[in-house]
Length: 116
Length: 114
Image 1 (tube, rainbow over the protein chains, first blue to last red):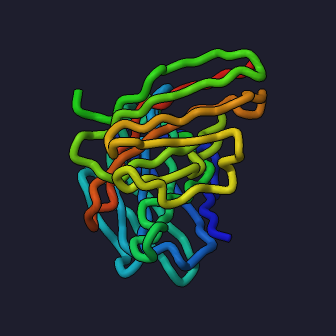
Image 2: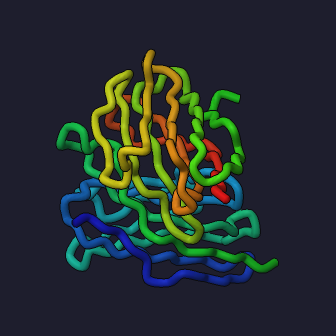
Image 3: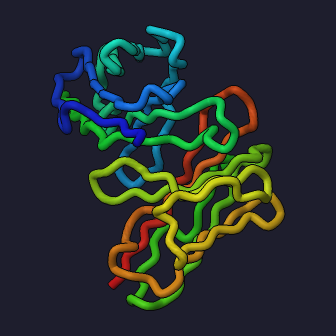
């Protein structure tokens, strides 16, 4: 079945460093991927998405890389700030296929801790 | 606040009782999703509505669970005869019916079954 998972459950960095969070997926049927940030007691917050026909997409301080050959996804956060401390989830979904649109399969999550 | 609103934020109930949660999506969003999240895990898809039609249900949604979106606006999720294993965060999300993939999540309802 479709599954999306993460390599590392925790990541600790110093303020100002760059952070890289990794994710592996097993089902090639996902045609887009999303990174979400979840702070304690809150719902997931959309960070950035990437379609499966892309290798890289940049946002504000974030970059998502997609390697379809090895089914690997990463989120890079530049100049990490204490406010970036949260749990980060990758999720995969299918854009086409009728009712499957919008249904996301989430990974376990990585806890990012940014030390001042 | 024009985001996704969920009520209540917290619910403690005794095993065997019924509970109902409400989700008010962003007003112009015609797609609405329910997810369940347990501690340390990512959200798991439960069900999905387009307008008032429930188009997909996960196998996680047992017969004790029912979701409705009668007028295509707010939605309710009811759990009958709650069990301790139902304890989780129940998240609602909504999105437009466009190629934009961004789904906005509410803050969730934390259910504790004692």
